[in-house]
Length: 233
Image (cartoon, rainbow, N blue to C red):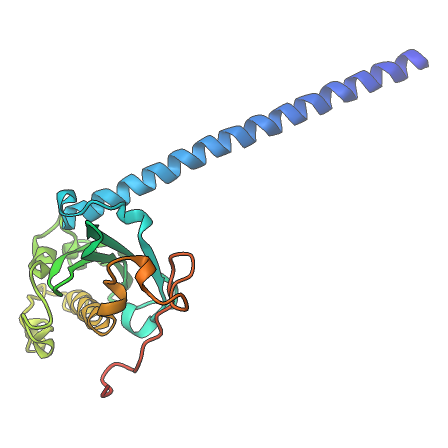
């Protein structure tokens, strides 16, 4: 009987040892995989940013110079939108952000927008969408050069009232059989530029430390819109 009990105790100890070892291996693998995933995500982010603003234009680690902004009416989502800041010798060069066009034909269209400190667009790219293949998906760079037409534009070129598709009296092309999709993207880019213009001083602060402490916490800021769109200042 004692032999059986001793054998059972030994088996239990062995099983427990294997369980602990297995848990340890899983934890080590998770940590290693987590680091690789984070590194891959950062590399992908930097590649996307560099497609808009060449890396030789800035000398900081853009992915680490980040603000999380909440402004649903301007940025298309009630979730925090990351703003990344590119600097050269501490001075602002450009902003990148990922606002949303919530009114696409098949749902939200997620964008990456880069804008220089003078308010000129560095470029716009589509990160994700569910628009109709062969129609709305022409907003993708790989499908059409249409998205490249935003590069170099600003709120003075064209003026805000001309930030529309041509069917609505604006300057941007629409697609045959698909007006809703380009209309949504144009509107989202215009609203983003308007938001940046309103908050230019805070968003383009030379360094994060130059902003008031009440505005910046852990390199994040919640910029509450000062007024609704269309209201007088």
